Image 1 (cartoon, rainbow, N blue to C red):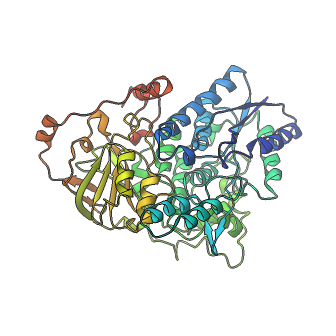
Image 2 (spheres, rainbow, N blue to C red):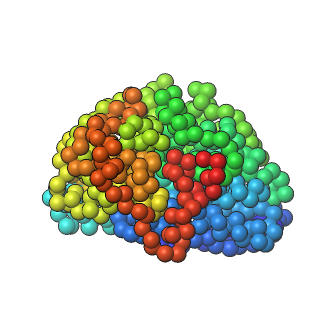
Image 3 (cartoon, helix red, strand yellow):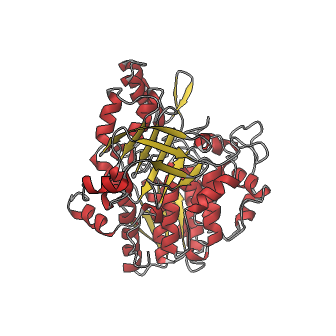
Length: 519
């Protein structure tokens, strides 16, 4: 008996086609001789939650989705599960649920959105957020903003760059719990229904076979992290891979990302910092080609996957499209080092995450401009109050303080639209979208609302960031600040939000709701 779990929703392009794909998965399960049982799981889309109070629900939804799948599969004594996913949090949630259940299972990704097109350029949702900043700076008029907005998202599918959804879909392929290559197929591609059928058949054939925890190992977790680093992927993967490892009982330290970023070059020229979109990666040869290049350089470890083949056997089937420029080699990389650094120092005793390979060797020093919530900072950006050289700090946005560790794409994109992406530094105890780029540092721990040092910074304090020494420091009288400043407690929003605030742990350990009795 196989659970077919769909995160279908018509609220977002990311998931609006999953009902159709679920029908094909069900057919595949039946073809295998197994019996499918369908049910749904909730989802929250970051694209619509972004920039307002609803963003607090996003990370919380990861836990709720995993809980929902666990309850339904366990409650009905089902033997296996295949989970259809789309928007950001549904992907790690599916892997977390399978790790908890430890039944045979698979994750099937609904695929990337197609490319938007305007004035001869490819567009993604990133283009819209940056157009908002350009509009505020007077660089484009109302008509151009509307044109970009209208063209950016042409149909079903998840956000088109190597943002969080595509990053995590790739990561799960290298983790072994998503069938290699099937998630690469874009949402509206003619072959998508056929690969959905195949995914269902794979899940059905393995319904009494290998449980998922046999695939989630220290080696496969490292493979997933390697894929994130080498693709220039989202820093949210730091949070999600740590969470998956915790659910599976696998030791994992976020330090792994810093180590890999110094050893693994970026070999995929993907947005937000590169030139191409996920649909281009599919056309070039997909995850198999990308993985083949990593394997050739000795950067991957072989292991089992949900298809029944090993990872290396899957990569043996790689086919490169002649003339493609999306995937390079480790000898001729897009960037010589990966783009994720783990920093510490005065402001981040438990760690923080620097995103962007272009900034990992660049120190930054400047005066702090401090905001206690995202909306206040966004208003200041719109008033053009942020200047080159500033260190922008948004605090009280951590797992407890937000709550839910909200993403700051609206602010970073608006700054990019004003031409400030590489001229200011941006620090937060919240998160950044996979589409954010610039000198951005998130996941600062401890967070402000539990008394982390970021709570004691004032406007004008000089902040020093040095990626080489891996420190974020401020030369201020810390003891005096602690005595004179009051730490704001976590807000009380009621219901599931207060449950999350009570249970959630540090972002440095994945911000899960698992009890941290040994931490």
